[in-house]
Image (tube, rainbow, N blue to C red; front, side, top):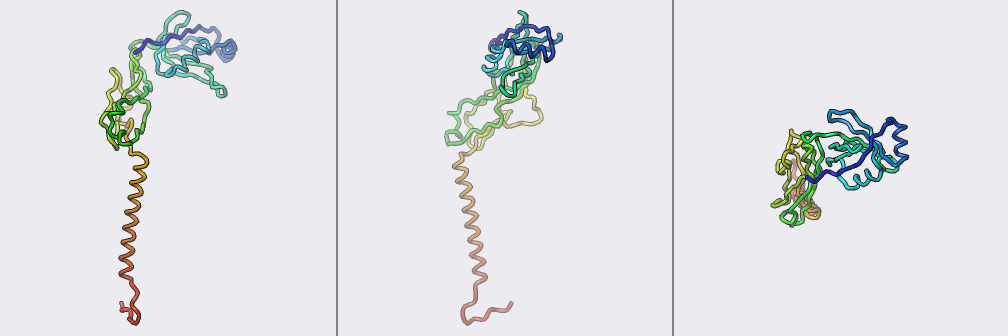
Length: 229
């Protein structure tokens, strides 16, 4: 795993809404660090620093070195509250971790070897059922993604979690079923064509049935008397 990003923070003496509003007026985002067998610490992070980290992506699934007054804390962000109007961060929570801490995280899914997938070469469509999978991971070794190999998959084939090689040291949090990740579905045009063919066959069967009924129920020729039943 890549070296954890470093975010500078300062401890905040005041707590409560008043202190939080004061911090925001001064260009900070208030927050708290908790867990790890230590007391919670109220902190302030510069607004532009936090915003830059958020824009980098995967903020909630990245191990972070949070320097609080110069002291390193290995943390994972558990929540970022945003202003409902401006969509800017207004508060954040961090959980302290040790190297051996086990946590549940949503890990992104990526797909490779599309050029080696017969189903896609034939015009099939990769339908992604899950673009993230929740895994139980070790804090010191959080994977960046789960990779699905599409080599050899044909139209109609599915990819389930049992088909995927998970990163070392990780397990899925869903253990009661073999859930689907993606499938190779038929192209829309082909599916529509097959549906039309099915409708035509049904129509032909209906016409044949009508013809038979017509033959049985023909009107008698002129001058003939209908047979009594």
